[in-house]
Length: 201
Image (cartoon, rainbow, N blue to C red):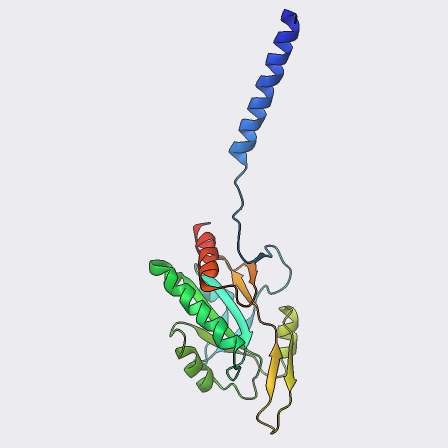
């Protein structure tokens, strides 16, 4: 190998190392979430609803917190209480950071879910969680904007109907941006871990 060839190779190697160094310096590894990462989605971007205390609410009210929104109804026999219980457990797993997690429950059954009923329902899981409701004529547009499916299933009596509905939750970062979609049954620990990563950003 000639001296000139050796010099060219050394120069090329130096350039490669510099480039690699710049790449490492300017590239921050994105966090890996258990839930589905939907960062940048053009749906589920916000809401303007009333909570069970009669107060108007938007995502801006919870800036600085990670927000988890679940759509369901208080007479749901299994999916809803399971999902809200997991959310409450995730808050406990966060320890001192638990107050930085805000749980929101949006009713798809405005006929039966009065503010009083929803307030009592939230108390079963965490006193800091809030139930939100939309007027019956506004609910279709709201659920469409969140890509939430729901359908009334008639029962034996007019008041014994059930509601089929989507079973996942949306997770928002501390700036109010939709980031994750958690599937039903993902587990409290996985949710808590994802919330920790969002809080660390």
